[in-house]
Length: 326
Ligand SMILES: [Zn+2]
Image 1: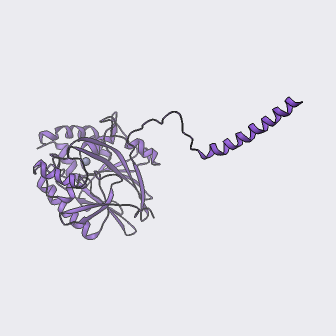
Image 2: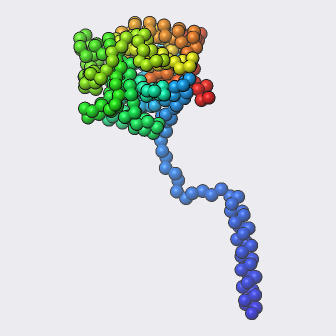
Image 3: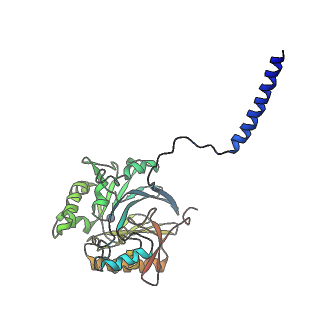
């Protein structure tokens, strides 16, 4: 009996003690025994916003990292001059990252893809467009029109996989002079021979389903080509407009959000006609800053939407924040 009573009292004591512990326990943060794995850098890769009645999605096909920015950027400048500019803005003087960002426009009638990104497998860090497009809510089969701004491998590489078009139901739009330049293959500089090979295998087989356009031609109502020559002989940029809302896809007019804007006159190694590329940059920045037209740019930092502002030296890239989210 006594033993029983003692045991019962003890049990009650234990129970209240446990309850007290429980209360205390819930106030103490619980730590998992196993540390979570380190996952490395994670990048935003899909952004969608409204432009009038259109929906615009930017998708990060990938990126490349390497030595730079000099001499790729500011190739006509001493290395120290270019390095001082990036250093003043908190960027590395020895390493550079170049993002590849395609733009998808849903007009409500057509799904239009601007540039096809890199070939799958060209490099580990790029060629993700067709997969990310599915994550973004579209299937490659839904793409109605693929518009190619110019013939470089980061823009046409993703048109075909294993000899088959990735965008099986699409028709294509090329700038006529850009298409002819690569297709004819005359006066191709040594450094661009590989570019021509990619163009021949990825773009030329699609010619029979393509429309060749020139500046001022419309792709569809609200989307109109503009000349952006220099980076590539016939590169086109595009005005995109819906219900009075405007956006300018400048393709590769600028390839570095800081250097190309602050010093549009500095040469970029991959601009084929360097003086013409400088002229195009100056004209384009002038127009966009004066008219306050937002831009989407293939090599601008993701989500690659922003404005160009006049600055005390050259121009400044002003990234969009939430202006387009309403
Ligand atoms: Zn490019």
